[in-house]
Image (cartoon, rainbow, N blue to C red; front, side, top):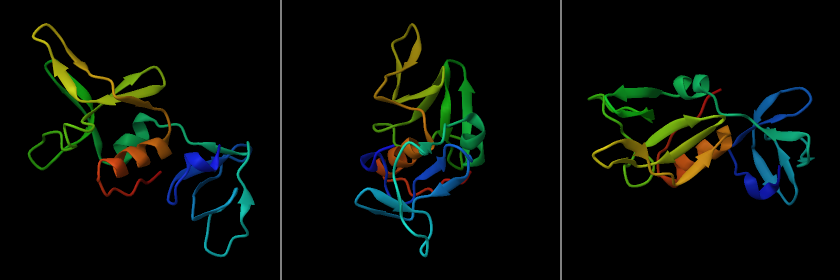
Length: 139
């Protein structure tokens, strides 16, 4: 991973031990995982955590499937998708990537108008932050 891919609070892991940790600080090409930890270099040993259905469910996302409307989303108290429609309402699984974007219904089919793809937990964290959704991701 590169420093430019990370922000404070991102979840990443060590490649060889699979130990998952949150980025506590970023300084030049070094990061630390706690306040008192000695910073270490960002290199090939620090890798992203793949985004899975289990992680989405653990963080309050639900698979919404009513008629032709489907996708992973956060639901409000009335069981309606609660993400801002104009920014990122739907998450549809495509192989190992989640496509995000608003749902489009063209009277023949319903599909996700792709605005981007995410594969990793830190990308979900960035997407939520960009949508101004304050959500602490847990693993």
